[in-house]
Image 1 (cartoon, rainbow, N blue to C red):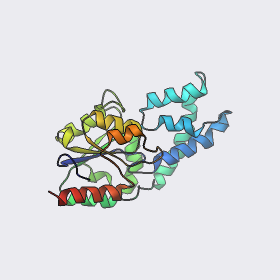
Image 2: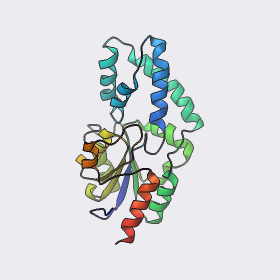
Image 3: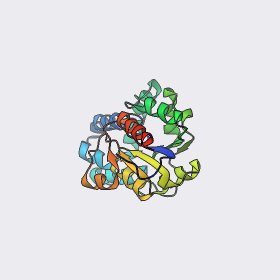
Length: 224
């Protein structure tokens, strides 16, 4: 494919894009929910993917009811999630190779996530890749979370690159909506959520993996 503008920066989502955390959190939530006498169906969890905490909690409460002890459930999930993060959550295929390629091309990089800065440190710290990003934009750094454009606009501002010259890489529908609304060139790399007609319309491409993204960028630069 041909990108409509030169890529001057790349902005990465974190969960489900750089690391395989979405699957871990899904499995833990489904496993732990019966301790509270409820089931947490996968289709409910899927509606939460890519949302900031308050919005995802609203989806959970819609299913579980207003009086369910949701904070206690998340506390139990987080205990096991933090233990997994301490060991090291697996990087998604192609992360290191794509970062190598971007560094060689002197293309700056940012992380743009709905997770907290503490979660970013826990999740990516053991992998050693955090220093390879020039900016990390996380919860608390913007007024409105995804699917609003604020997180991506904040990332572009910190990189000092116009958003239209940034390539956004996302795995979730709400992340794609946010990047597209920010005016970024957007590529979806699906994780738990399959691309819909809306995603195809908002994205320049649907990539099979970050290896595929690297190849697309390489071909685009070769054609310049």
